[in-house]
Image (cartoon, rainbow, N blue to C red):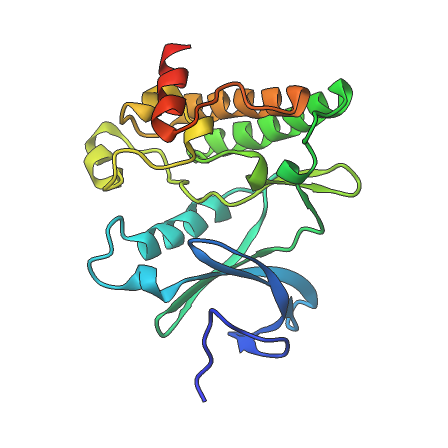
Length: 236
């Protein structure tokens, strides 16, 4: 019987990987903790929901997933989640990546963090972004949920969901997303909210928003609706 990649159980296989448990789910798909018997290590497997692979899907999400893997796999830094493999099995596309035993930063910052701890985390995130930018890769959706902190205090930036290799002027049209705005509104720079593509400057803006969250325990901009939030960012 053919397995449903969105509902795998412990012991099921995806490629050479043995599924152990579900780590999380989201709009893009499912993330599993799995074991790689070939290299004898735990990995995280990000499986794209097949609905995103259907012909005519606006934004070509499955293509973006593969671009994410190719972009991030070029990075080799202690504060960046390492991509091991990108593969397709029939209509199932998945990424095998470093398994990080830690907690998402958004679960740690309610009420704010001690100043020294917040600065340490921000420094590690900045190092990760600097490495990525040096290699022509941007994150595009940096936020607390995309930062994992280990029990030893090591930060890993994950989920380069909007990452793409920075293009030359002649490549801009080819690399531009179908949608003029994509990302998480509260962390987006003003230029993104007016339709500009994410770039290194917008990553730095998002880091500033994240540092505010870590220190104050709240976001610097707010609104009862997305429209009010966007207005606050553009105005204030």
